[in-house]
Image (cartoon, rainbow, N blue to C red; front, side, top):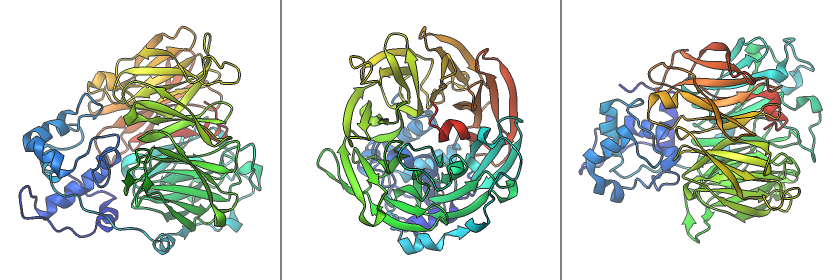
Length: 539
């Protein structure tokens, strides 16, 4: 049965007290509260807090009641061909039955969150005046991996050289993204050595934490705050002064002091979308610092807009709004750092924006539900510089040209496609590798979702399918190279919520594709982020 999660208090605050309608369909108050939490954990990301739909379809009662209880239970249990995975491995039959009823009822509307409420959550665990001036542990911290431990609300720090787990740091629930202070060609931090040192997490519950990799493991959590009830992404300004956190609910972004984690400014993201319709639940998806400007790119999921937010003067905030396509999700820069390539996955498109001219550059049509995650760039023998994406809705990698200066005839056009065994979440490569890797986590068949496929950059052929695990209920997800590109790390992820350290990361030789070792003792590891790869924009 459902276990009380870390979200119990957060969800209660976010959605308020429940008044269950006595009319059919109905649930007991206990089942309603349980379903509300499960919906937050597993459904709101695609279908929206207010259930109006985005990547997933609308789940408003006028639609769900037409389908009926029995049909809804089957959809939840077995998934759909459109990209929704089966929840039979995640929810019990009783939870599925209650969820089918829950989504036929009116959605509870959560409250707003004031700047004063956010500030009340700010905690400084280590005074910035006491930060060390050099690493205190004597390790090669630039090859550390920062690893999301989804189910326990923690982030692990793993030494990429020795493969030791150094710390399990408490963060927000189900951290979605971790970002470091990155190298920026236009603005620079006061101390250049800080690049890659400080990492910031954004939990699904809106909690943000600051991690200092120079500290001893027991002191790495140095500050925290909270900017929303439901959130996804975070980014650091290139000068190291500010953090930005994007909310799913309330729909806003918040600028935070990077040293103290004190929230400074809230900006609503509600507005009129590219179709001319007002959107109340306009959620913030991806946020990235622009390598060639003092600004962040902020993806407005439901609006179908990219906002370029200039942080050089936050009292007089300049925001350039670019109409693109719905529903924006996640993306990555090209190797020059000028062009940002982001999935508008429900539109089956990749969007390209020019961060120098601050305008839409191109739209690339793809197959169903592109999902590149942090993406991949490489050189193709025919098309020159290219980028690629996996898809949530089909087993395919789509590759397009992304060098308008050197290869204008190939730029922003599909170069080729590779049929894979199943739909996936992530694609990754490294300049020193002759391969790119794609997972297949969204396929319903266990053997396929437990495997990753390795594709040759030159021949464009799948050279190996690697079954990372055969443990029932586990999947292979999210590839990450080490700093020099000699290793690829893949997560073995428990599909059901797990509070036990039964997950692991499997390490492969990037050239021979043979297994080298395993890092065990992890709690449902998902995304992993290598310090050098992320802070230096290595893709």
